[in-house]
Length: 256
Image (cartoon, rainbow, N blue to C red; front, side, top):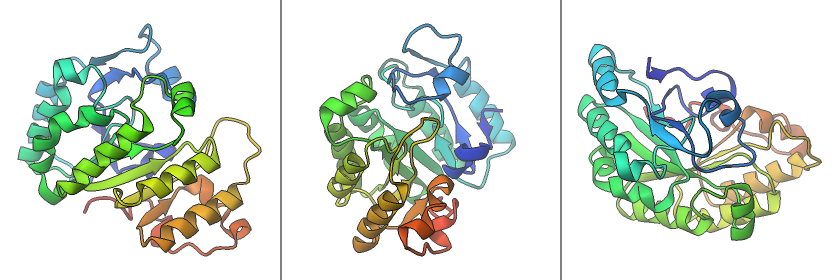
């Protein structure tokens, strides 16, 4: 099945997910997915899954999930290869016609704008987000050399917001808490919703209670809907805050 139900931590992003490409060009140093899913590919490349559009159409004609579908959990729907193959744009047309509810997560920056008409066609049944990690460009290049720079990701979100498209941001991984809080502040005018996590699979001495308190205060102070991921929720008492049921509900921000 192309459209699948994510498990574990991945389920906190969406009830369903769809990966249109195999591989990724971002070369993120913190990524663990490439070790699991991209082992047969040599180098930072992305290729369309075989017959993905034909298979997608057949699959959703049989049964289309009523719940939100994320593009994508592995890889990026607006990878560099998309400018050549246009798989995501074509898939969006198929999904829109079928009445799907779609959440997009990308580090592709301006490349996502090539699909702006396809995205606008969904109306309220779509939202587009970016993973935001650093405000400092040099740090972004160090950790995510193949991804769009922070300024480009923010500008991409601002353009979609001006076009009336709901926007969101994923703050995971959080590598440098000061950097995450800085870009969170800068993103406020352009982002409607936030999902906030932490750094996993890497030993660190981060004061996660302090980060949770600061991000919670910033989001609350700006009246932004948000979800705190499980691994960060456990620092609630240390942070001296009380998260609402919605703020701890992984389905809270999903399209209904």
